[in-house]
Length: 273
View 1: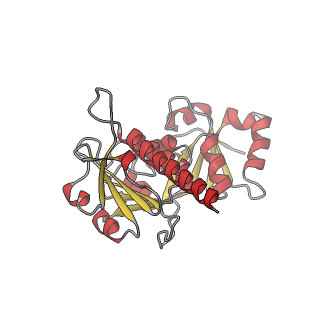
View 2: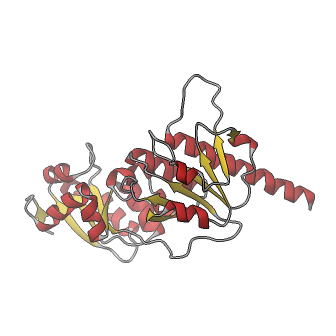
View 3: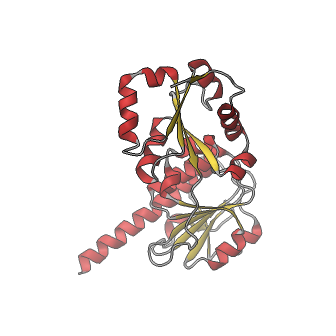
């Protein structure tokens, strides 16, 4: 199989654009996964990627070559081999693992979830890809179903967000460029805003049943208009001396307080039967 060595190769040009341009990703409906962990999760949850791009030294390792056939099952995608030097130049990380996957960006189902199982998150203007990815990772771990992103959020399908989320994207239904005001008003459950100006404490309200949490911009927080659509406005108690929490940390605390309350309610129901 020929080895690509030139940056002027059409595939290399495409990979560079996909790494650097959210507009190009959106237009092409493609993005890049870096590293075997993300590729493994994608293959197990979604299926075969569009193609794999591997470094020359990676494919020359017989263990890796065998692993790729197992990873992708019976349907092996197109594999392009890139020289080690060029792979290091195009990789989105400082220490490349030697494997990239080119994937089609998944589309969420048209209808959002309904019923008792609904657990959703609405994000307004989250700017940092690392924060966004961390929120998605915690959301997937807590069994959140739908993620709604406002128009001014960081690109959820950027390589940096994908790395921070560690595969969480493929366990969630992600809705981009949403009108959060309308989404919040239409939600079939309790919408809970998070704000450092709130009077109620997260640990003093019921989180059982259909819940949607609202989280705002790292600096400005939630807009007043969006807060007004919520049935509850809460704060996380902080006995220490810091003024606020990182957005991703605050989200994780909220998610797993709901997990705790749901578990307690389930055990109580079992005990009363």
